[in-house]
Length: 101
Image 1 (spheres, rainbow, N blue to C red):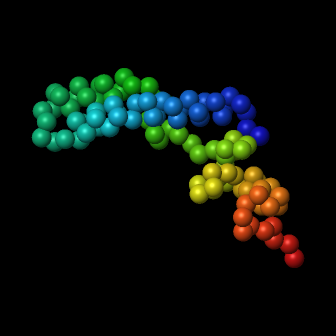
Image 2: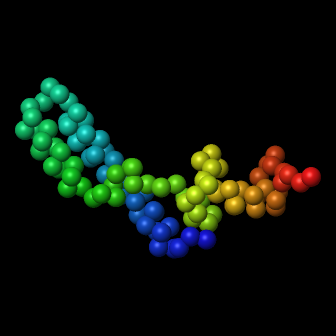
Image 3: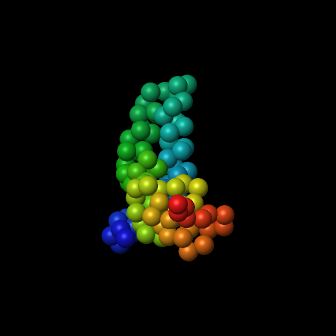
């Protein structure tokens, strides 16, 4: 089980990414538009830098929704390999059977 603080930090980042997504997209569009004057693009880049760092989508990290584990994460199921094995062993995932030989 991951530390509660790490799980909460990741939730906070997800909220910030959602909150600032439209502003960041608008500023990035201005910055990448070569037809705009250099001064306007520079001002947009300064405004982008003023936004919280945690509002950037690249700072998000995938975590297991059950345990908060950051490694060995299955995107399709949104759980870690360990949680997946436990769910499979308990028969909670349809079609999955724990292998034994």
